Image (cartoon, rainbow over all chains, first blue to last red; front, side):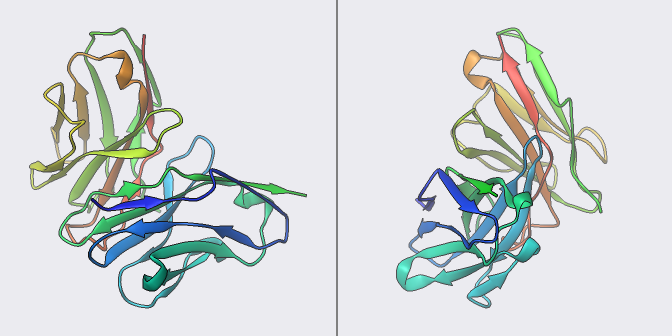
Length: 113
Length: 115
């Protein structure tokens, strides 16, 4: 069964520092991969998605992710963290032929001054 | 910007009672979903709905659950006889169509508390 693993349930960075949130997928066929963000008391908002076009995907709010098949990874990065980036981030996968999203356990990002 | 809305934001009910969670998907979307997130756990898929029928459902979605699109705008999740373990945040989502690359847009959720 397809799944995603997010390493690190909590990540803390200083404002202005690099943000790196890790996601590895397991799938026997090329997957579609997504990163969602959840701000407190809000729903899930799509940051970016990989749909087998370009391997480097740019999203909203300065985030990007690179699909690396050899590493089965889809890590999320942002060059410079901002206080407003503090939220929970979810990696999700779905396989062609189905539409359900399978989510990782989430990573809570804390941004400190 | 169009968005998915859900009501109520918080529902408290007694075990064994029926609850109906309501969602208004984005107006031109054709594919609808329910997910849930038990506190401290991952977001889990429950069911997807297309062309007035269930497209896919998970093992969680047993006979006590049902979905309906009673009119042209609402999409509902009914839990017939709630259990303590049904306490969770329930998210509705919608997407334009069945293409798996289509983005799923999520509502803010309904927090269901079963006492």
